[in-house]
Length: 248
Image 1 (tube, rainbow, N blue to C red):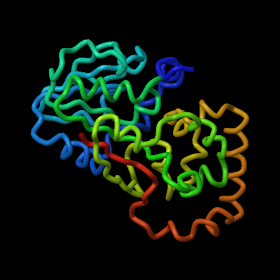
Image 2 (image 1 turned 90 degrees about the vertical axis):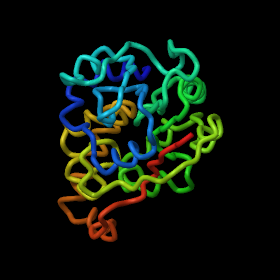
Image 3 (image 1 turned 120 degrees about the vertical axis):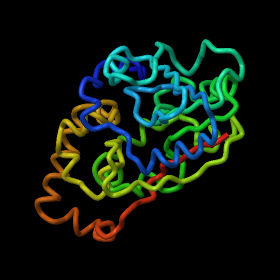
Image 4 (image 1 turned 180 degrees about the horizontal axis):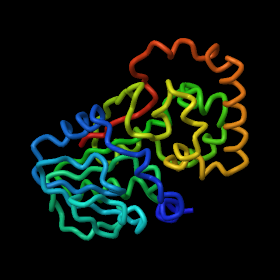
């Protein structure tokens, strides 16, 4: 299933849990520098689009485009692989939590680099040693995520394709944006189907894996096993879970 098909299928309730987290936004907007014109690629419903600048959005999913709020930046149907703009048309191009859905991430990033003087990408470093074991949800409940990563370019390959540097982005314990790692200190949230539907991972691993993971997590929360295994997390205000900014 392509990213477009996926979000046309699961995206109807996306805005219930996926919204701009101000701390992550501050990092993204600072990385944009003094860019006055910004292209947002894979823009979804408009989270993280910077205020006070001219923003043009590109999003392939009609369902996601339809959920953009009144007053949001204008949004075109399209995808990263073939952007209908001249070279250096924008001061900056950004992509937030969408690169992992692109059929060819390297080609897409090179398109961003072509049409903009600066590129800022918020993504995951799933190639980091021990990434699957760092987050308790993939380590203890959803090992199937490893299969989703097979054949995908590493973050160093992505950065190298556009000459980007990488910066870690810690996830706050009370993150407002309900992406996959957001509830690392609030495990009960993963039992809520409306929360899970805002995360593409659950649909991609399939219903059997989802049911098993939710059942096992519920049992471990009730028995205290989850707290026993993850005691070191309970006093942390933020966690390093492989989120990265690529800045070129």
